[in-house]
Amino acid sequence: MERCLAGDQDACRLLADAHARMVGTVIESFDASPADEREAMEALREPAVSAEARVIRDEEVRRMHEALARLPDKYRLPLTYATIEGLDYPTIAAMLGATVGGVKTLVFRAKRMLRDALTNAV
Image 1 (cartoon, helix red, strand yellow):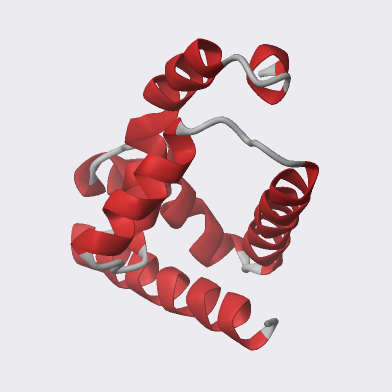
Image 2 (spheres, rainbow, N blue to C red; image 1 turned 45 degrees about the horizontal axis):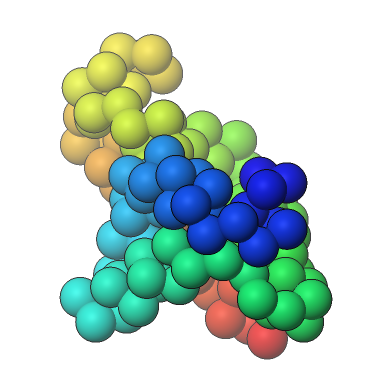
């Protein structure tokens, strides 16, 4: 991370590749268009070239973490398990003692709540 922030493009590519699956999953969870998804992945692979870009990105990450933290556990846990941990719905259902359909509903609602929180905070 430090090498990437210092402008080492190879380090940035390695870091981006290491986290591409997680970032792609999060982007997809917000129903981004294929063009938006490609743009986000390309931006991730390029080194942060300015302090201003780092500040903006850090602010966006902070807002995302805060909005996620404000979700009730009932919604945050299934969303986190599905989009960040990459667990499938049957596994999450077993962990939470819920049905697969119930987990799908909770994840859907959590995404909507998170999207609304981030949209309204702008």
